[in-house]
Image 1 (cartoon, rainbow, N blue to C red):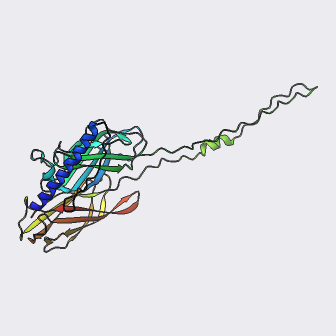
Image 2: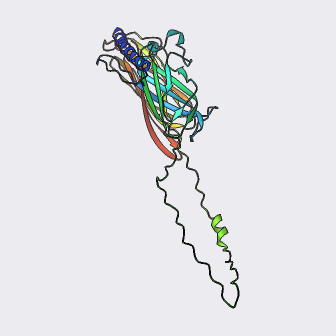
Image 3: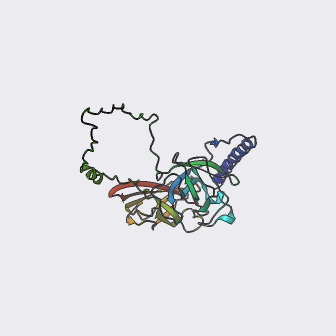
Amino acid sequence: MKQYRSSHTAFRIGSRILAGTLAVSTAFGAMPQIAHAVFAQDQMFSQLNLLTYEVLTSRGDSVPTWKSGRKYDVRMIVKNAGFLTSDVVPAEELKYKGVISCIDVDMLHCGFTCANKPEVRLLSKEHEQLKIEITFLDVKWHGEKNALSVSIGAPKTGLPYETIDVEVSQCVMPQSEPDNPPSPVIPDPQPEPEPDPGYGQIPDYTPPSSSNDDEDDDNETIVPEVKPAAAAPNLIIEKYTYGGQSVEAGSTFPLTIEFINTSKTHRVENIVMSVQTAEGLSITNASNTSYFESLGPRKTLSKTLDIRALGTEQSSSPTITVSFQYDYIDNNVRSERTSSETLSIPV
């Protein structure tokens, strides 16, 4: 555990130097550039990942189509595999699913604007890898591009600023028009007929109306509006427990994993969960693969495995990788998805 703290302290120092550089650039009127600092190989690198995002109405309903000028809420779940929660969040804010203020979140200049300050909630516990939920309220899309850029960092606790770019698939991009449309063709004027001498003026002629006009109107083909496919469901680990704040080397402890289907509309089926332990941990009296028949929208399942801490000195916080493989059906089409997450066990 001391080796982990030492590496983490070195990473914080590098992050503070980067934050100072941004502050000096801003003071002289220069536009700050988000840069990735370079550290030695034995230091810990940040691993910021977007797990899922949703476009919602003010009532919390999922939005399948986002047209230009409309305002909706955007909620995303972000995980940083390089930091424990206790290293970033101060003790007074260590409350599961509580609102925190130690992490700065800003929407960068992109095709979206938001006048409100985002709400950040903590979705991880003290000795778990950092996971947060970010909610932007009344986000307006301007119709130019569908890339949403978000900057996340906590300079006071050593979490460096990083940028996440989200391609919002619900946005309906406008169709491009040709640069030089063809000019309309104006026919040449025709000379008026001369009257027939001796018989007076030629009477006006009215052509008979065609009965097919009404039929053409009735036979017009109405093209239905094509709606984009709904967002694919994700399986993510909502929480996990191992009997306390840490485990003793040489002991066997129960590991309980609880995962959730993030979709509000789609059921997932044929779920296969695989658990792979790193050096220092092993599964006892059970297989590393579990099967679940199905999981409804916004529902959770849990699995408990007996894990033995071998007591090696390779790592004071060995990891466990949990992988999911599952199916879902959208518009009568079955699709397959996979996902994985890494858990840290302090020994």
